[in-house]
Every structure is written in C-alpha cells, then in structure tokens.
Length: 271
Image 1 (tube, rainbow, N blue to C red):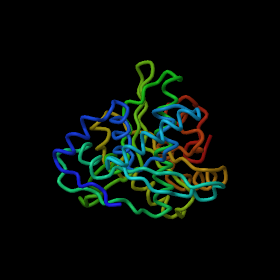
Image 2 (cartoon, rainbow, N blue to C red; image 1 turned 90 degrees about the vertical axis):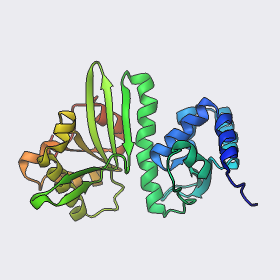
Image 3 (cartoon, rainbow, N blue to C red; image 1 turned 60 degrees about the vertical axis):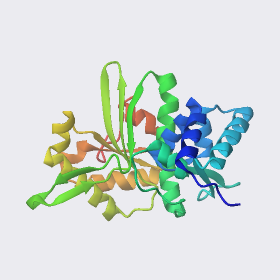
C-alpha cells in the first residue's frame, strides 16, 4: 500500500492531533534513533497486558500517520519472536526538527547496529524508570551524535571523541556526569585501548573541564563477567595516572554506576 505524502498542511494536522504522550514518544525516539516497542511500553504505558495492547494500538496509529516507521528485528541469541523496533518516519522527523532541510530515509540498518543502539536505549529506559523510585533526576541523556566532543590533539590535529552517550544525574544537590560506552563483545582489545586513549587525549586537552568544571567518569558497560575482566585488564594497560578516568561495569548495574549509588566500583582494573 502506498504511504501518504506528507504535505505541510498534513504535517500541521498530524502535529495538532498528537497527545502529550505521543509527543514524548517522538522526543525519545529522536533522542535515541531506534527504540523497541517493549522499551516504549515501559517508558510510557506500563507493564500489564492491557498496557501492551494500548501501546501497540497507539504506535500503530503513529506508523499509519508516518510519524513512526516500524520494522522487525530478532535479537541475537534470543529465543522467541522478533521485536518491533521503531524509528522516526518523515513526519516524525519533521515534527522533531522543523528547521531541518533533509530527512533520513526509512532505516534498513544491520543487526549489529540495531543491537547496539537498542542497548544504549535500554540504559536510558532503565534510568528513566529508576528515577521515579530512586530519588534522582536524569537531567541530561545525549546519544550519538549529540554527545560527541571535538578537540585538538598533538600538533593541533582536530579530533573527535565519540561516546555512545553522555548522562548527567542530580540527587541531593550533587551531580554525576558520565560518558557511556556500551560494549556487546564485538570490539577487539586493541580498539578498546585506542578508544580509551582518545578519552585520555580529550582529558589532557582540558576542554571538558573548561566547559563544565569537571571531567566525567568514563563508564564501559559490558554484558558478562568474562567481558568485564577482559576490559578491566585492557584498562590496566594504560598509565596509572589515567586509571581513575575509567570504570567497567555490567550492563545490569548501569543505573547504580551512572548515579553513583554503588561506590564499590571496578575502576581501571582495580577495586
């Protein structure tokens, strides 16, 4: 079936028809690029079967209006049916950023990209769900490319640090600033070390400290204890002066690691 063309008048009508919750969904997907239906349900609807039904109906209407585009994705290693994954379609992109002149095509990303992007989205979902009960506020969560940082390296070369996300939380008058790296076991130790050295270079540039008054913790989130040990050993190869920049934790511990709730953290290969 041919999808309706989104004219300026149609776009205005679509925007006027969206509820507050639907605008929040557009904002979250614009922030994260790809979000699963299950993640959107937890963020905006609830966890019951009736919540799931309402979520599916509302997301379906947004797909029909070309606010969202939906595709199926089977999570690597998972048993059972594939997931519905959502991105912004042309109307959603234009509503999220009215001044933008070019729009992304309907996504057809590879499985590794989807898995990694959904893992980053999961960190955001866990933080949003936990802040309601744990007494902290998630004041900033920027994913790629909004979280990237440019700086000048040795000899004046212009470099770009590319974290997966930057998160800032506030609790009791204190803030925690964290660069987030989500590792799903697909990168070699050499690439991990190279990325860590880019963080060291950015730290030495002083640009972030001048910008915010401090340098964020660099948090690597990994899926299992074997990967945690591997990355911790890799961090231990860095000069001792820079170990304190890094922390390696399990993905399941993301909220505590980002909010500073657990001080028994593994940093630079040491406890």
